[in-house]
Amino acid sequence: MEIIEYLNEIRRKNGFLLINEVVELAKYNTVYDIFSILISKQVIIGKGNTIYPNVIIECNDEHGIIIGDNNILFNGCSIKAKGGKSK
View 1 (cartoon, helix red, strand yellow):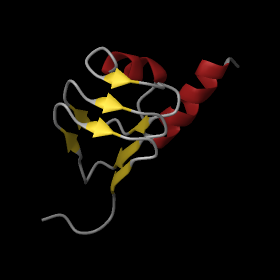
View 2 (tube, one colour; view 1 turned 60 degrees about the vertical axis):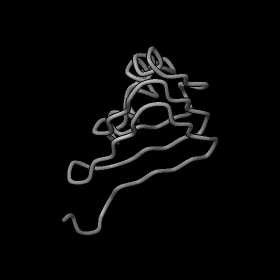
View 3 (cartoon, helix red, strand yellow; view 1 turned 90 degrees about the vertical axis):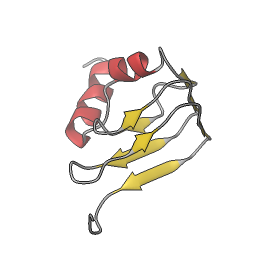
């Protein structure tokens, strides 16, 4: 199994964007390391954002995350929307 296939399989199993989907995200945002960021498929991200390495944006089907335009997510930033009560 090639490395990209392996990384995509892990991402798929855990609900994160696949490598090619992160590349698509990078067309409208600055993504410094497509391999080190993990973004749940349910996350909505605007344009003009800067995403540094080792960023995790994670949510499940019940709890969404919306990142607007022109934000900076620094190294090691972790945003999670899981559990808890929805209003």
